[in-house]
Amino acid sequence: MPVITFANTKGGAGKTTAALILASELAARGNRVTILDADPRGWISRWHALGSANGLLSVAQVTEETIEAATLRAKKRGGYILIDLPSSQDALLAKAVGLADHVLIPVQGCAMDAQGGAEVLELLKALSDTCEVRIPHSVVLTRVNAAVTTRALGAAKEFLGRRGIPTLSTALAERAAYRDIFDKGGLLHTLDSREVSNLHKAIENAVSLTDEVLAQLPQRSVRTVSRKAPVLKAA
Ligand SMILES: Nc1ncnc2c1ncn2[C@@H]1O[C@H](COP(=O)(O)OP(=O)(O)OP(=O)(O)O)[C@@H](O)[C@H]1O
Ligand SMILES: [Mg+2]
Image 1 (tube, rainbow, N blue to C red):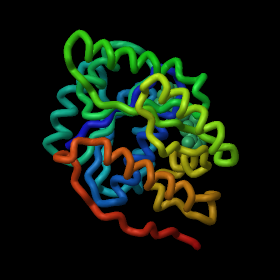
Image 2: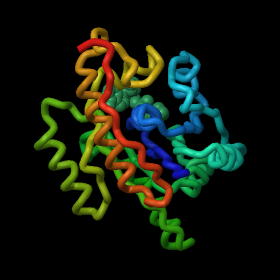
Image 3: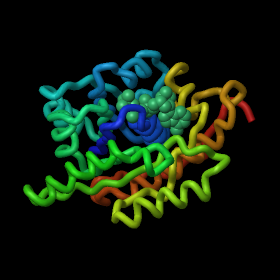
Image 4: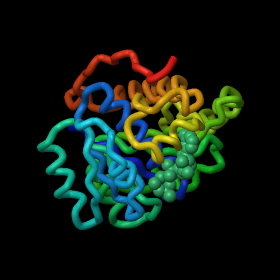
């Protein structure tokens, strides 16, 4: 029952998108997934209300007051728990980080964008230094333009690496599918490849990201479900 918290105090860093993409892939693999939607704007809840996500995936809206009880309930249900935070730096962030087995910090492809991520990293360091609570965490680069990835991405990873910041080697590319899923509802696999450009690439990217995130989690908490080949609606 691992808890993965998506945190970055910078708005628009890609938290909600990364959370939904990971949730979609985990549910497509047959895992139970609960998304705790801590953003009052409720993007994930609105996506869920569109229906057609599979029955393994549930969403609950939470606040600073309810997040701990909701996490306990989700743990009883089993499976993966993903927490989507708003961009504020407050007690909700501290609680959601404290509940996490892993904190994922989405940062937009350019390392200069990392300010909000740095605030989360400072919070994690403060927890470690003052409370001896060490929460595993990693940066995931997001919205990376597929056309210019290698050099720019390499530079961003090097920038973070030099500062000792763990960074996933899989970045989330800028893909239409990652926007369209919010309008159309359902999982990435249930989008129609005739309507969504490069859907197969978006799914491949989600598969790699999920594999790498699962590898970061405490192995006792990871339920291994073999990856089935995605079935697209059109070739
Ligand atoms: N990988 C991606 N491909 C395409 N669009 C993306 C991607 N990641 C994010 N976006 C778009 O960028 C915008 C911001 O992304 P998102 O809402 O995920 O960020 P956020 O960190 O959750 O923002 P907030 O702090 O406001 O909650 C959205 O319009 C989203 O559709
Ligand atoms: Mg968001």
